[in-house]
Each structure stands twice: as C-alpha cells, then as structure tokens.
Length: 607
Image 1 (cartoon, rainbow, N blue to C red):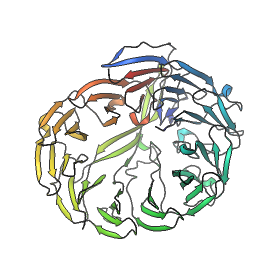
Image 2: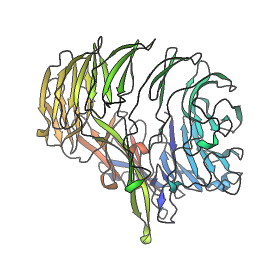
Image 3: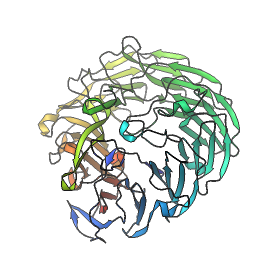
Image 4: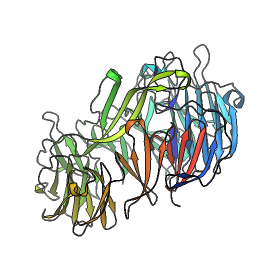
C-alpha cells in the first residue's frame, strides 16, 4: 500500500515558542529520554507490544508506514527511525546527514514505498540559495541534494500568516515512476527519487500537478495543473492545462485546456478534482463533467454546473474558527453505457439528477427538481432503479484557535485542525428514480432529524436511519418493510450505518445497535461508547473515533456483539491525519501506534 505523509508548519500566534506540526497539530514538547519497551502492558483491553522512544524530539512528524515495520519522527533539524520492534535504526541532524548543510526545513514530507521511502527536505534561505535534500528513510543516508530548485515556496512568508501550508505544492511524487516532478518558474522537471538525476524537463506545462493518472501500458502520464495559491505570480502565462506526456522523455503527446478553477480542501489540502479513464475517454470532475478523447485530447462533451463543495467560509481564520463544508454532492456514478450526475441548480439552488450517454454525452433524462436538500452525497444504481440519498452528513474541515500550555507556565495559541462529519438541517428522504425515464418511482416520507447513508442489499432492499428510527424498504415497490423505534435502544440518535453481513449496525451518539436485515429485529444494543464521530473498517477490524474536548480516542469494536476490544486515548500529536492526533494504524488494522512527544507505543488490536 502506498502511503504519503505531508508535513506543514503550525500557525503560531502570541508566543515565540517554536512549534511545528502535521496538518497544523502541535506535537508536545519532548520529555526526558527513557529507553526500551515493556511488552504485555494493557491499554484498555488492548495489549501493548512495546513502548519506545525516538532519539530526537519528534516535534514535526511521528508516523508509521503501512506495514508497521518503520516508525519515523522528525523535528525542524533532525530525524530518527525505529524498526518493528521499537529499536533505533538511525538518528541524525539534517545538517550532518546532508552534504549541502540543509538545516532547518520549512517544508518536509515523507513518502513510504513498498521497499522503503524518502524524507524530502526544503530549506528556504532568505539571504541565500534555497536548498533541497532527499534522505533514504530506511538508512538515514543522504541520497542527493540540490540548490538548483528555487522559489518552491514563496520567500518572505511565514506559516503564521495563514498562507497555503499543505504539501509542498510545487513537488509531486510519482509513485509509478519513483520520481519527483518539480514545478519551476518556467518549466517542470522530472528527477529520479533515488539520485536526483534529471530525467527530462519541459516548458510546455506550467503550474503544479493537481492530479495525475499513469498509463503503464503506454508509459504516459496524464496531468492536470493548478496555480499554487501563494505562488501564482511566478507562473507567467499560466493557463488551465490537461496534458499527456511521454514519461520517458517528457515529450507532450497532447495538450488541452479545461474549464474551472481547482481549489484545495482547507485541512487535507487535497485538490478538489478527480480523473477517471473509461475506455478511450478521460473524465474530469471539476465544476461538472468534462470528457476528453484519451488518444488526442479532443474535448468530446461536457456538463458544466456550479458545485457547492466550498461550503461555509468564515474568512481567513476570523473569530477563532475557520470552517468549510465538503462531500455535499455525490460523485458521478458510471455504468457501462451511462453516467449519472447530481446537479446543483445555479439560480434556485435546487438539485436534480441527470443521466448522460457515456459515448456522446447526450442527456437521456433529468429528474424532477429536488428542493430543500443542502446535500445529496450518495446515489446508487440497483436493478432498474437509481436510489438517491436526499440529505445526510457532510464533512466539515475547520481550524480552531486553541491555547496549549507547556511546562513552566508557557503557552502558545495555535490553529488546530479538525475533520469531522456533521448533519445540517434539511428535508431528508430516500428517492427512487426509474432508470429508463428518470421519473420518480417512489419517495419515502420526509425525515425530520437526519438521514444516514443508505445500505443496498442484493438489489432488493434498502436500509436507512433517520436518527430516532431505523427503516427497511422494498426497492421495487417502495413498500416500507419495517419501522423500528431506534430510540428504544437507548443509544442516542443514529449517526451512521455499517453493513455487516446479514445485519446492519447503527452507529449512534451513545453507542451501537445492531438489526437483522430480514425483519429489523434488534440483535444487540450497547451504550458503552459516547461521542463517536467516525468509524473505520480496516482489514477485518472496525474502529470508532471520539475526538471531543480536544481528545482523540480510538475504540476497537467486535461488531458481532458490540463489545469493545479496547481503546487508545492519544495525549500526543502527530500520527496520521485520517485517524486524528497522535494515532496511526497499520493497513491490516492489526496494530495501533500511539505517539506522545518522543514516546511511541505499539498496541495489538486482537489478543
């Protein structure tokens, strides 16, 4: 599994205390060093495999690769690594590791690959030449360095000022080629990750790579560009470009323009654009659908419409909070010969569904206008019906200005990021459209409180919760098969649904309740867990997350009975942004890593 971890500086206000972070979350100041690890200690009912420490302070990054056999911690000036047993592999100062004296790194990010990975460093020097260095993440040895790459981030700016501080936008790692694509003022350069050797350079592409697709059969890269937020002035003559490039020599196979502006998400900094290849066509999802011939770049058809992915914006960190809403519109749904799109009306802000012929783009039908829905996050094709989720949860990404207190009474105000799901007031319901005509086949009653995602079972039944009740519907007729009083389970309002074999587990505000799909009868209810805002299905394991009150608790759950296998409460920072502060989980879901300053704990999920 490919894994990339991107590091950015924290936004610090009102203190001279140095602080840096992964996605803005400060790592705690390191404590005095304690060596080794004690296996067998219990964390809840999880067992600790080992406890260990980084040899450096690890104030910038603390993260593990997908297999859990390499743990890395960095600060501004150094890095260290541990193996799967928690034993030190290497430790060193950047200034000593690098031969060009790369020292304090304004930007650094790690890339984990199948065989190892890299630490990429960018040392911005206001009175000199900027330095770049690449370190082997397994050995801690310098692979290469360069002073040829300048202006990768804007000079004279600070992270405190709230400029775009996601990944280093002008450097993109191409996994399939094991290479870095570096955007310069006048060109784009592809260099080998292992030695920095230039593979090719082209001046036919301007800006940074927002998204790419690699065609292994032809050894070609399809790339779409965007103008880096704080560096736009550097790219003279910038235009929206969709380019297909020969990966061997940089020759441009074709160059096309596209409509729209690529934005980036507030916290994750993910470019809000998607690309898909379907046969001989390239589909771009940006301000609607744009379709290109993949062989020559010719635009074949488009369905342009406004999207509301930007959500609510409180200004540049104004009033102690900045918040934006995402995941409001379902992504396009593809079948062999058609594509279904959720459209946002530009005038009345209503929404509707369109079906287009995949080949020609011809509009086959448009549904009735659907009023009163802030979001329509999911659509499903099942048999001769298109199921539409009207309403539901949206993803909120926000920064909150919080005060962290350190030893000796010192404190710092910092912008701390949060990513969570929330329900907004709207007219929620389940809508079934006839696939042949787009006409409404049936629509459920309006759910006053909320609507969970839908679970489609064998193209026959659909299951959904509205907060206080749990429903089953026959898809063909719309007949309500059952209506269960979920509030009788005494686990609070439903927040999500999990498909679990012949059962549906309803994640709720105070716990879990499980229902049989056949008749809606309750299997169990447990109110042992409160405040859960997200769940993860990793490998064969299920996890719930609670991040209330600046905490981050991860629970391991046995979905057959709702029992808690164990829990980990993070008191530190770092970890992977998708799991919240201080926590990382291996790709098989069998191990959790908890970080606190220098300390690292490896925890076994299944005893």
